Image 1 (cartoon, rainbow, N blue to C red):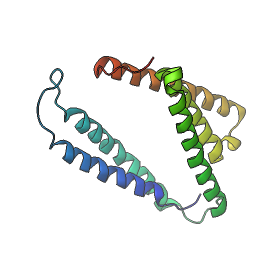
Image 2: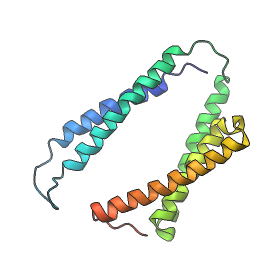
Image 3: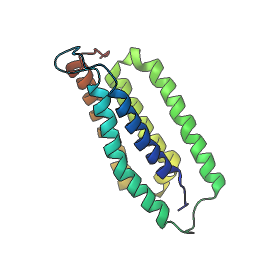
Image 4: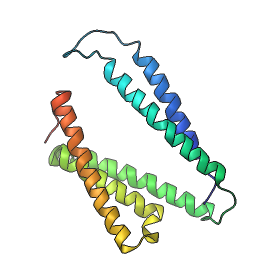
Length: 168
């Protein structure tokens, strides 16, 4: 395992950015647009949740970073190639998602994008090659369930709670 400070720094960035977003959201006017919610409610809620969820991530990633010593790890060149491949993969998936969104609708395009993204990143990271067939089956099933639940839940929230229609 390689000693990489990137994860703890990203978590710290999330903490700072979410705190700044929360402070910025407090400056929004306290008027009622729909129902009892003000324009500041959702930005405050989301930034607060990001802040709360980033704290345990920061602690975990910092502990991992601190504990890693000189254990055998892939060469920096292999890590760099994998990182670039992962970024290119996600960018290409996003382009495909944008092109398919209106044709396939929100649920199918989002579930497909999420499934491909999760599984593709597992494969490109090298974890896939280290898994047994049973673990691979669980990974595929887990990615499938996650993608379907995420797409349906977000669709429900936007259509029913926010009253913002998404193409079905």
